[in-house]
Length: 377
Image 1: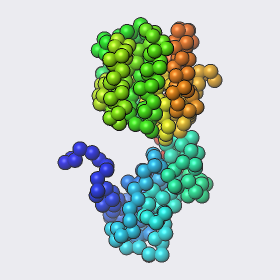
Image 2: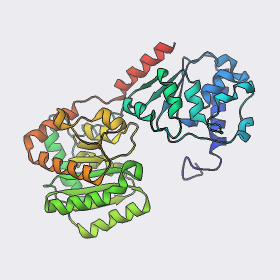
Image 3: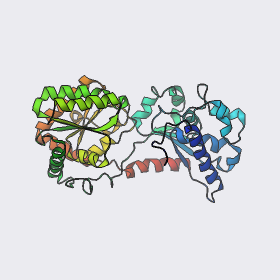
Image 4: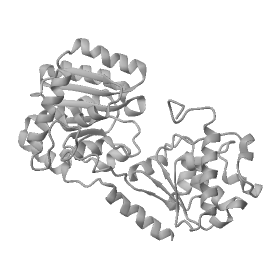
């Protein structure tokens, strides 16, 4: 609580190891035996190794362990000089900790966990070719790996009960509800509610394709004149923030940006927007597109990771607009398609109702995890 951030400090390794040891110490003394130990990312990646190999945790040797990888780019590597942080184990097993001349918690967990999951089926396949050096290991352990889509909290993200909205709505009242929220949102940000509203919500970083947004929005606003609106909510790279701010001077009344993050504004944008852009380069699962679907906002996404698994193109009988590359041309073409679809009210209304019927709750995702737990018991 005395630091502004959670990660990125010189003592990350010490903090994460201390947490993992404390967790195992508690479980080793617990009056019950855990059914399964489910670990997430490198921050808990040493638990499968320690539970199976450290002498003080012999009681836990036969407890199944699962690793869920949320983002394989972050692996938590540290030097062998810190090996003494770990409780005693047979040193000949040390190879289970290492990868490329360092202790690598994520690699160790991939080796030692009984099962490996990722947050979407497509991301599992993508990791085989793009996992910051772990590709061969992941291919070797493919037999015990599965992709399970994340869910969303459908109580927090529910347009029928959301207290942050100007007007609540459901499947039956979606048209009137979204229009009321769009008008309220456009009043705040000085936009025209009669035009299609394109939005971006998220971190303004390369991974999200945000480096292309200034040029994408400039081109779209130039091409479509007074026929579209754009609203951005996010923070990240300073140069991206600066260029997005500059667009306000060029396209006043058609474009606005909120630098930072505001939970209430994000809810209002999902409710009031017509489209949400996600031109991500990497997206292991993605939640924003699921929030958009829940609120009747059409997602415009790149076919990558969880976006590929959750959004089907309207042209293929789906409810979103998909493109193959994170490029200015691809996203601009998708925006052009979106304008045409918006102007065909019959299709647009049908797409909205289709997407709001989809179940992306944790209830659905939990069934897949329960099945996995039962297999391991």
